[in-house]
Length: 204
Image (tube, rainbow, N blue to C red; front, top):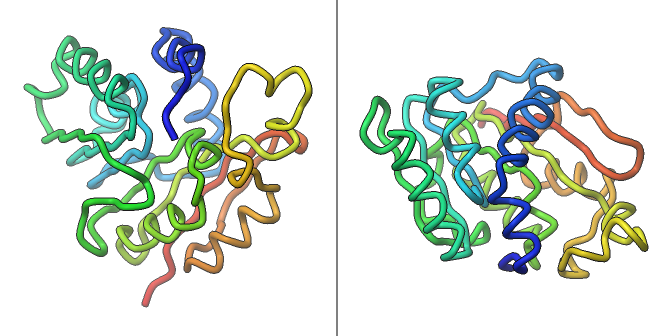
């Protein structure tokens, strides 16, 4: 599902870069997460701020990203070109694509980064299965998500467009991760509204 114009402005704004670095990623760090250093994939990269952080802040060895929205892909290409992400250091590739159909071989990635994406995906369970498929055994999913209580809030959720089939509680999310072979090893929540977690693909 693509973003509406209001959501695009939010995702592309500089405030999102600050939130990602100083809110989402810091919360994941406090869980003891190993932030991306190996081959890393970001799902739903928006304006490219997460990709930028993976490369220049955390030193990922290779950075890939997919986003279903062609306008976001174009915006990310511009941002990443300006900051030199395509020209310097570790290889980087981004493309338009779906989280439910990741164009990568099995066991391709050490880390998958997924920040506020699943609640936009109609078949979010299939996206979880795809994450498990492309992670190497021992690889990690770093995830931040808005939960059903936030999405159904009469004020907070009214400006966003989210599929009704992609609304889940913390318990439902954790259960789906476990069913896909991803063990949740760290979790932090903001009441019943949001959750940040690290899940590791079980060794075969």
